[in-house]
Length: 149
Image (cartoon, rainbow, N blue to C red; front, side, top):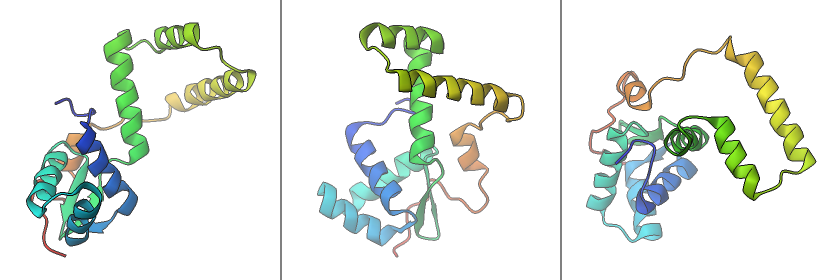
């Protein structure tokens, strides 16, 4: 599976972590049992899978996000535009606005975003790859089984 696409259950699991982080692995097992009907082994398997993809880390029995929900949504959006529109944001906006008329407030907000992005573009370094960032996080054990806690 692609790194920035989550299946339905992966998404629900990720939401539980984002809503409760940092969360002890024992508490995560309890949350998954209550919310998803999962057994302990299912929780650990899913955690290992999403840690390997660079989204979360298990450090000393505490699970935390390496990528925030907002960052992940941005990465998913970039991937969608790349796949569906050859990476062209103008083509995406053209397709979107053919089906839905933008309000004056939305147009003004887009103008501000574009102006802001243009001003920040020259000063901002490139975003790191999430999997590489996870591997370079000191103390992170992204694929280690969670410790009870």
